[in-house]
Amino acid sequence: MKILVLNGPNLNLLGTREPDKYGTQTLADIETFVKDEASKLNVEVTFYQSNVEGELVNKIQEAKGNFDGIVMNPAAYTHTSVAIRDAILAVNIPTVEIHLSNIHTREEFRKISLTAPACIGQITGFGANSYKLGLIAINNYLLQN
Image (tube, rainbow, N blue to C red; front, side, top):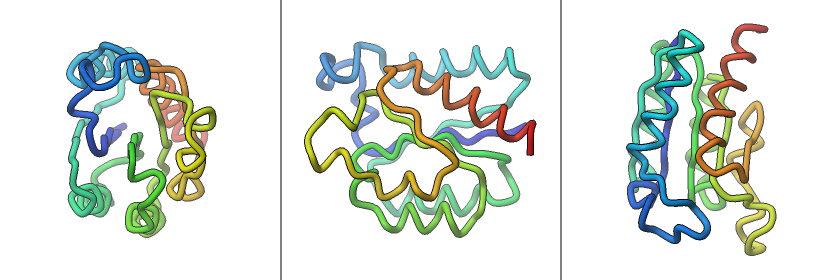
């Protein structure tokens, strides 16, 4: 099974960016953590991060026929990107949206996700464990469907 793990804007700054909200682990730390879990699940993971909305849309489109599922932290694009939402719907690849912080306890504008309705589920608020939980969730979903 092949899973694409997508990361949106500013996640390349993890570890130093608002550690009180996002923790002290870097994106590289999280990738290592996820790879360890993927190995236990016998799942192949590929990681990609971009600050550019169109590049994320391209990766989602390129996933069709190449990946079985997507775990995605769209970051700020969660609240603004109809393009990412439409790309998820267009490729029809099961996608789990994840967030490090609990977006539902933050500013009002962060409580609205334009992308989550295009996904099979959303995991939010568990720090780096949100990635692990997202991987487990997509793996279980794909095994059952």
